[in-house]
Image (cartoon, rainbow, N blue to C red; front, side, top):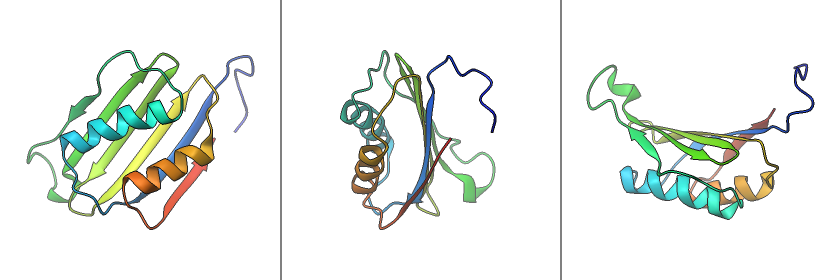
Length: 118
């Protein structure tokens, strides 16, 4: 992908995997706030968490969440039935990708986390 704005610092990391923990609103909040702390990223508000509560397909039930950062934000998507997660870290500040991957794998008790930077 061609960089249309080379003067703007951007780092993006997509992480996906299957989780082995109990997943609820508290776990979603904990992950979003603590991954930011772990990576030295500053938040300016509490996470916003949505759940379709039975609307739409059963296979897509779970959580959609976002925490705003001083330097962009982190999105988290949870599929409850499949026990699957997808995280997008999008920042205007550099962060340690290996630390993000390791923290995410440990937090979700995931055997494998796949990831892509762009």
